[in-house]
Image 1 (cartoon, helix red, strand yellow):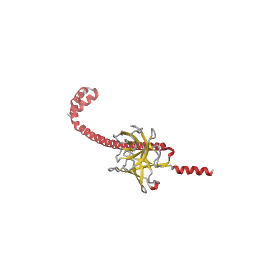
Image 2: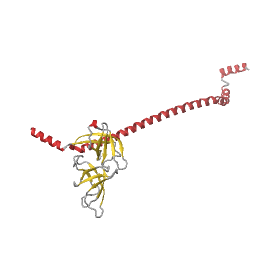
Image 3: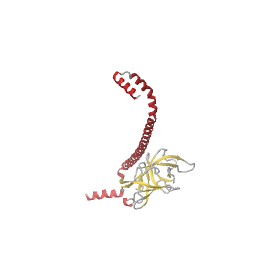
Length: 274
């Protein structure tokens, strides 16, 4: 048999007579070879699939972590943008105060006390920053209150909405003077002792009058929100919505108003020296 095969191979090598026969036999054998190699190929495919799935899971985990880090950075960026906007508004409000103030200082809220009719906040500036009792406090929108207690590193501010607080104000439209008192409610002030025939309208801007030299003159206090007149009563009941918003403010502005007497004395002294 071996000799026959060798002989056939020799004849095929020399004359190529068995080429067609070998091609036919290869075609018949191919399915058998495919079936024999199928388990090996299947094993390779499973192995590659497992490796690929593991790589995909690892890459997916890395992408998730990267996305979380990017979202965290974006949130910090948004927070910084909002903080910068608030600080810019505070600085703009200090410009509105103009020459009526000697200097200003930004402070941060560290506590808010809004229990029953009590309306107070605590800020992170105190005696070491030259804060004093009675010092006016404003935000970017209006007058917020005044300092009532000073510690070395913090101060307590009585809000203008506290029911024990009152301040002299006037209407920006016509200069009509009144007293704005707190009600213990966040969004309501009352204007006292305004006769029923007073020239006052809903939407009028209420500003500080500067009387008493406690608050800088001409800074927003609130806007007239409602006017009611009781039959037989000599005075109107006027409600004002405060301009300041301590519930949303995170930073406030401590104000050092100029003392008019001191400025006049300085001008007089300078004149005498000359």
